[in-house]
Length: 102
Image 1 (cartoon, rainbow, N blue to C red):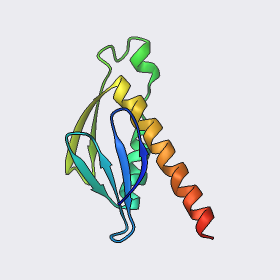
Image 2 (image 1 turned 60 degrees about the vertical axis):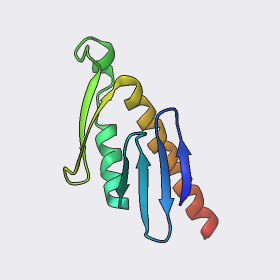
Image 3 (image 1 turned 30 degrees about the horizontal axis):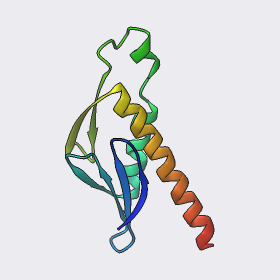
Image 4 (image 1 turned 135 degrees about the horizontal axis):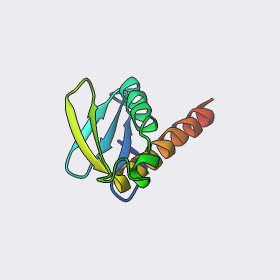
């Protein structure tokens, strides 16, 4: 397994042999296909962070279900920001790797 990115709370890995990705949530590691990783990124992009700061979501909690409802996670605002950064860097690393391979 090759590490793609590591943040304060999470890490992302790519396994070329099994053609899958892993996100390490510190207490749990989740295996994802590329489509599941894209879906996870889309769920994160759809989170309205403004609501965390303008009082609409004063608790700053987000609940996400991943990988066909196999995994349920509860994240706070800092973890959501960290996850967004991690996935952005992960897809950037994948794009760079694909350009190098060509």
